[in-house]
Image (cartoon, rainbow over all chains, first blue to last red; front, side, top):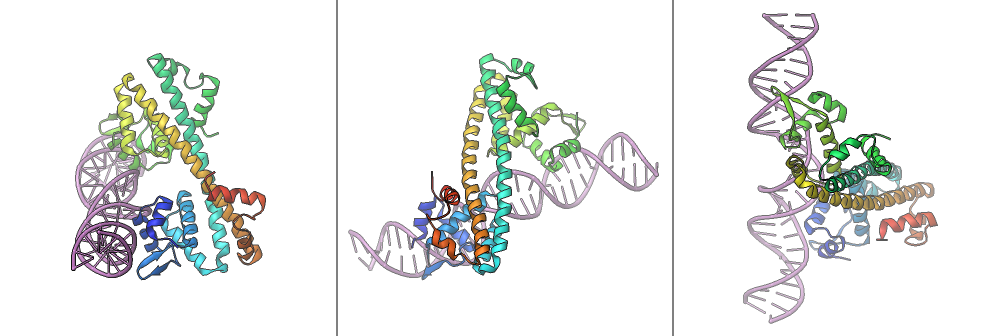
Length: 147
Length: 147
DNA sequence: ATATCACCTGAACCTAACTTTAGGTCAAGC
DNA sequence: GCTTGACCTAAAGTTAGGTTCAGGTGATAT
């Protein structure tokens, strides 16, 4: 069993955040000795799931709903599975968006490197939008069009 | 030249957001006819860059700084290049985090599918943490440890 | 001429996810 | 016996990124 301070260290989260999560109902079965919270393995795994669901784009209130389903038992397996299937689609979508973003960022890295080498953007502007070097053209197109 | 309503349609952004961006200084050279904003190609490319920088995790005030550099001319190429190099690292980091998130989500999809088939989590718990089917073990480990 | 649009402004409002504050308990070390 | 450190609570405060509101302008359709 761990204290809130230990869990804070382990996960790199402020103590205030852990208390906030608790207040929001994200640790349904959390034990206490007196008023002091005792985090067990269930709570550590819950925290991993919280971080996962948060990064997937879910809001706290919906994460709370998930833990309410967990507390409800095997009758909610279908709900929980559906939740994670939707999260999978959301994360896959996010990855596609990030790839497009990365293409734009890489293009701009090349852009400013060349601008610095040339002393101006003139040479680049002559190449836009479709006479860029082949490898650069690929990331430019990825960043600017829906392929 | 496009009106704010047309740009709103093109980018799927609320008109209020475009006005907010303008107020925050994200379209430094924006033209107007009377009080009416006229968006040109520069502003459309600016919007693409805004969306890119936002998704990369940059805040509005730093995006504003970038456009201030653009307005300042060729003396700021190095600043702008450095900005995008940092954004590249940030996006790559985000992608690694998302992959871990995806692994957790995929594991949980399998988990609840099996729990529904079995009628309980007992069989799964017997397999945890290192006797899962090989393909599932891989995503479980990716989700739970820093590889 | 009048009504309807699409646009404008400044200011107030909103929400999520925390964080900070003020005041309190309790066990251990000096 | 008193101070220090780690914990506690409820309530107020903060921040980013918008959104909504109230009131106004000016071109076009009826």
